[in-house]
Image (tube, rainbow, N blue to C red; front, side, top):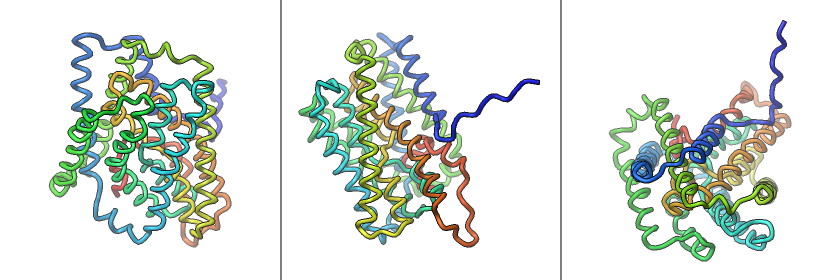
Length: 354
């Protein structure tokens, strides 16, 4: 009788979408787009990014986001962690260049610190930990909304001196390829919102496929430009170590800082998960606009951090749940919620739906 295959430990959550991203990177390494194929891939990727941000804008319920303003202290705390503390830590990491991190990887790490928080995974982990899910939804929405403007502006301030190649042309490209489609989605939400809800599963596939195309185009350009000769295995290990410290610091600050600020337990959980995480779905398209041919190397820290935050937060959420007092008539969130938490790209900014 054949024995069943051993199960992976519950903390070892390798998200299926992350595996698809790794496969896309491998494909770009073996078969990068060159010549006319690269031109077609770049044009298609540009259209895919515009479509993504149109869908993000069309899905974001401004009414729901505004309804959460009563938790303004919580949202300001999350925004401060996302767009102030994270960038400060990223700038401080420059002291590790070049001993631990090469300049290109530090630029990617700094970009990671500028992107907005997640929505979908923050909601899933907050629910699993029995925290304030409504606050997590609104906090993620505000972070994503603010990030559409704040991330490019912060990039203009801090990446110009870090080899980010940010310029007025890049800012104009951000406006045309990200802000304009996002604003159009918000304006047309009244008419297309119902269609998006009815076809959310199919459109989730479009989201994921579009981001995979962006990744393939970026890493193909990197292969053609030869940027991967700048990275060695010891450098990647150094990057992982730096990101582990970064995540540990942010989890500690959000958890204990929220407690010192007097937030109740449920709100502290939402702050911990929303304030310590970074969005792969929003960051990848932005990087393709900001970095061009250098985007492949620039998004590597974000891709690694994304998987790391899923694994660590899954363990943390279960510990929160184990120490929670069960509310009357309230069932614990299913453990499987954490396994699918990483699929933020399925909803993007539209994670507020439902």
